[in-house]
Image (cartoon, rainbow, N blue to C red; front, side, top):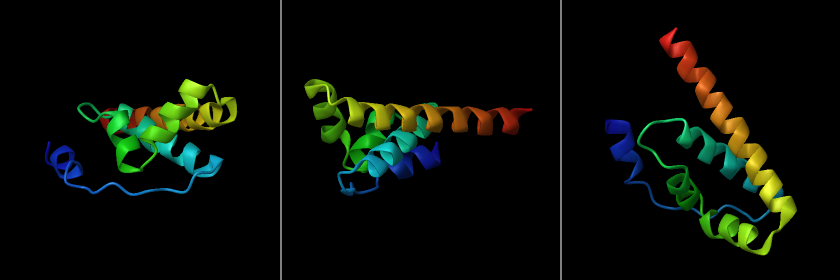
Length: 88
């Protein structure tokens, strides 16, 4: 609970607009989705990519959607593996 609260005190940053950082933001968002109580959208806001990803989905920018989605799946599966190893 303390880690979740301390995350709310972080200030947003602005990552560059390219596919690597969109993938990285998706990865971080996916990690956040695997942790109970922490929203993936919150991590997108902290990385400054919330509007970028929202715009990509609104405009159907397939390359941006794909890089974000691949990152989110990779992040979520990584967090699931970490949690699985902790509890087994």
